[in-house]
Image (cartoon, rainbow, N blue to C red; front, side, top):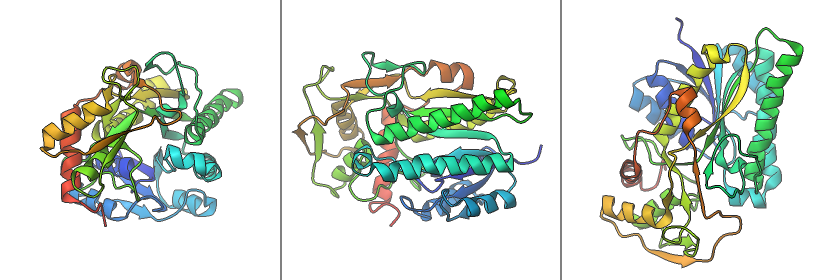
Length: 349
């Protein structure tokens, strides 16, 4: 079989760079398109260092249809792994137009170019934020969608667009139908075990683990724990954390599923990628202190609007249909995050 080429949008970012490692190590050829608005090209050099393999990189924006079409004309792409997009909930509330333009319009341009190039196999980086609030704490794929912020709504809109694309295939009875996996992430943390690639947020981190790491290394003074009066086991919010390496393995499993008999006549299907259990903020802090031997200074702050007390994935569908489950535990996530942080105190800078 010829080596298949996967185009990775946003491939220089946190999850994208780990996906590039997994793809190269699994024998795929990798083409990255990234505008570097929230990532560094150094991550791709490190991907090549880890794997001993090279990739092709285009510093371009997926919203530039002409340039994107030229890349598809030049590269023998068989599948697209789509990570490119903005991803901070708080920022999305302040800049909704920016989020809809980047995430929704960017995906529409990408889908148009893919359609014209007859490349119709797509693994989409969605999010558990599409679910919104629920009375149940364990989220299954058949739950109604009800995102409560522009970031989550942008992901839900994209899911709708991709489902409509797939449904249209049945109406026009195309011979090359869309095959789409919508992967709904819970909370990716950790880093590659080499410590060469990891999460390098611009400015103050939005996510808990890089914030904890930066407090522990002395880059930030203290962590704010938003609410300690939730109806959870210790009063702090409980979330489903997943090692980023486990997460990206779900993406290569998704490609295999799209190429299997199950998707022979096309389709668009959502899968949760999560551990199926939750950890509280205090449990993250305690584990971090135990594993690293570092103290994490924190203060209790008021609850944030829109934060749920507890949510975690029901990952059974991914196990059944993608043959995927998490392999790493919280100690692994903390060990690898701290290894990255200590080796790269300033990130990729």
